Image 1 (cartoon, rainbow, N blue to C red):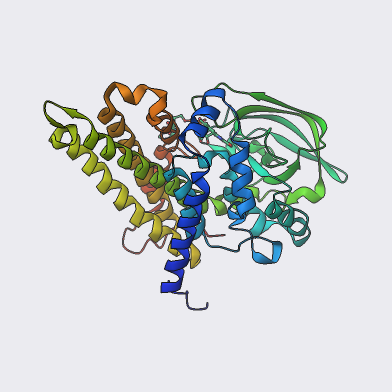
Image 2 (cartoon, rainbow, N blue to C red):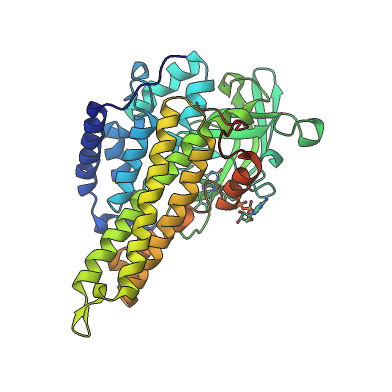
Length: 399
Ligand SMILES: Cc1cc2nc3c(=O)[nH]c(=O)nc-3n(C[C@H](O)[C@H](O)[C@H](O)COP(=O)(O)OP(=O)(O)OC[C@H]3O[C@@H](n4cnc5c(N)ncnc54)[C@H](O)[C@@H]3O)c2cc1C
């Protein structure tokens, strides 16, 4: 194994430049923009187009396929800055989450077919279909079936809570190619497909769900949907392990979004606590307001350290399952704490849409549940991370 690259001063400068550039991009999309799309439940098309044009959504696509060839550290900084600017990465983050499966397990032909077009913004890979009504967090219990017939697979089944289906050209789909009862190892018999939704053969019925956050989330029904066999990623039946491979990246990216949210809440709470004068002094002079903000700030900063530790290990291709999961857990909870104190600090005004606190409050709450519930992270830490010193028993691999 080659020696891992150490972070250099230049890298730190590059990261600062990324931060600056994402902040500038987000300045064109102020609070009023996000308030409007949230209220109208519109997809933030102009924002997603701008992030795509900037090349940031292709951060993880290698340069040879037209992307920026960045690491997860830089990708996480991009999402952090987006959320820290009051925007919502939820509109487009799946393109980063799904990338690992295609990069590590897709064949050369698939990469050449899709990645350059995704990098140029001509194709969107924004839909990732895992969750089902009868399986939920127990993903090996999925029932959507893909049955091979000659040169294609016929897909039947149902997914729930699948975001951005109507805004995406491609969907990464997890389906069973062997029924649950027919496999000894329940992680086997699951396959991953790229479904090209631009011209579907069979019936793909997408039913929007009325949700608390503006994520364009749907129920999706597959009725004899035909997927060409060439769109199977990797080997048939091994898809679950490919998805698990990408989970560490997903956890780190979610942690970063939460940290961005957390900083936004702290900044807004501090500004309001300074400005709002009652009983002859700013409300921030009261410990009842000041201390919870300070506490939330400390927790965000601590979670940020875990995020960077996880990201650095990931980029060095070291095992990082424990760190990635802890980063997601700590950051999402710290952000939620910051959201609460930000709302408390604003009093009744926190409920008024024009302050944007209630929108971010709803958005950040999601991060404790999706894409994985924090209980499942605690279960992972409790069951899989037995040896705190050496953590030799950790299974997850990086992509
Ligand atoms: C806005 C939104 C967007 C989403 N987008 C997508 C998407 O694009 N693609 C996709 O595939 N999915 C998506 N999801 C689904 C999301 O990943 C799931 O909601 C999440 O994984 C939890 O699954 P569930 O809702 O079925 O809850 P369940 O699995 O039914 O869990 C319910 C509760 O029980 C707890 N629980 C379950 N098992 C245990 C256990 N063993 N120990 C302790 N507690 C347990 C959970 O932590 C949770 O609190 C989205 C969800 C939302 C809300």
